[in-house]
Length: 178
Image (spheres, rainbow, N blue to C red):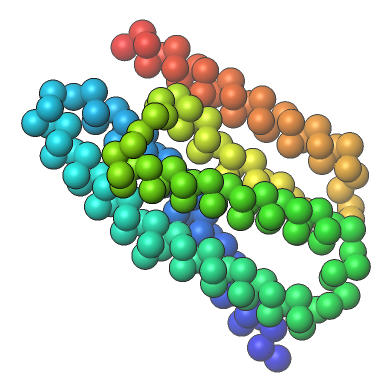
């Protein structure tokens, strides 16, 4: 009876978790680029970015990650038959990668808060696409389940990676020409 409510909450928190994972690297990019400004401007901007990063990370991203995982666990308790299905094994693998990505982003966040920044804006643009790849993989697995052949799934995953890479390189080239 309450399964759909739990599923709805799980989806809401997955969405807000990804919002945080998409936006935090963007803030990091702006933070890195602000450091190249004159000192007075850089000091003002980096102080503001640190506040924005902290609020996003601790008020939206972390709570959403925790609640998403809790509601997912609740769904698996209600539907234990999913745990024997191959698509769910693969989904859980990608979710584990997402958690790994989240923890590595957290390490980056701590470095930005301590102003121990050794990342380029280009590196951060590539890092940002990790969440995109994981989102696509997880959503396609959940929607298509066993109807997706692993070869076409892998080709789509790699193809998306190539498209994202080319997009970043095109952006770099057009930005350089500005």
